Image (cartoon, rainbow, N blue to C red):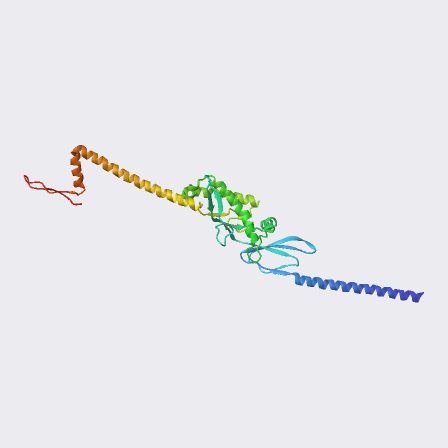
Length: 316
């Protein structure tokens, strides 16, 4: 009995040792795999002076969560396996609606009080609010939706975002302000244009904030702290269709011709009144002679007393 028990104990101990060995091997394999995954999954990022990054941690086996903001001009930051970072611009940016090759948009169309369509070119200069929590909200509400973060440079998503959050509010603001002015005043009257620009600025800043829902777009020199401020607008003179410009030029030319004719008519009238006065004093023939002398057509030569008077008409 004792011999059999000893043999059983040895067998059981052998099985237990085998299981421990197998478990040790499995743990070693898992550790090697994990270490390899960590070694190959880690990435390194740094930021330029005009760049800020958002770091999100997470991977295949855990939820993605916001970790921190990486400030401009930061050295190497290591991201774990599955971690992501998103780059956004730090400093002044511009929404250009001049219609040039590199602009974000074509000029904006407006309609004047007298229903004339005009084109307005210009730009809006701003700074993205990079205060960490504000930038995070911008990214999660807007940036991810449009793909507006940078990836080795300005993205098409950034332009799409600007066209929605700048062009549409600007369009609304300009149309609303333009309903207060006739097209000739917008095109030709500096005082009217100044009033229109001020009105557009007030409405545009209001509509941009309403569209974004928060102060994501600040004044050009905003540094991330303090009051956000307003976007700076630069607006060119509204341009009507070329046909109206030509018609306006013709109208001005006609006014100048009419003014010149009025001046001629005034001169003729003055001369006629003068002739009437001469006739009253000198009689018809005397007036004619006086006029001829004034025009140099008759030469009067003084003669001694008692001598003859010669009147010699001038050849014409």
